[in-house]
Length: 134
Image (tube, rainbow, N blue to C red; front, side):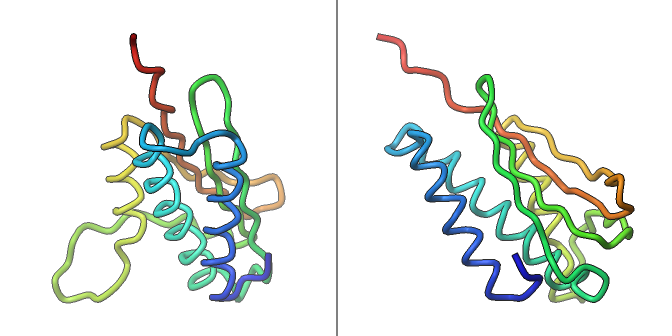
């Protein structure tokens, strides 16, 4: 997708639609879906805001495997961002801290990796809720 603000809600809707198509509808999956939508919104927003100058396109990938859902956002900017701690004097810059917090609270993992092309991919994997016991 192009690295523009309009890509944020478009990507969020595409991820939601894909999760629902994978059968992740209903109360059992609501928190997982909400967390993933927040994460993808923050990651795409960060890429659009900070990487668009060096990366006119942003790629989002969603995969569901063996009880985990992974969402990743890739851009061509080599800068590896860090999650900033809360700073009451700043109005922004805490998106990655939020992603990290939501991911850890859900029992997941997240990281930033370099791509072979010199950019980066930021990803988060969250566990799928287990089947309820009867």
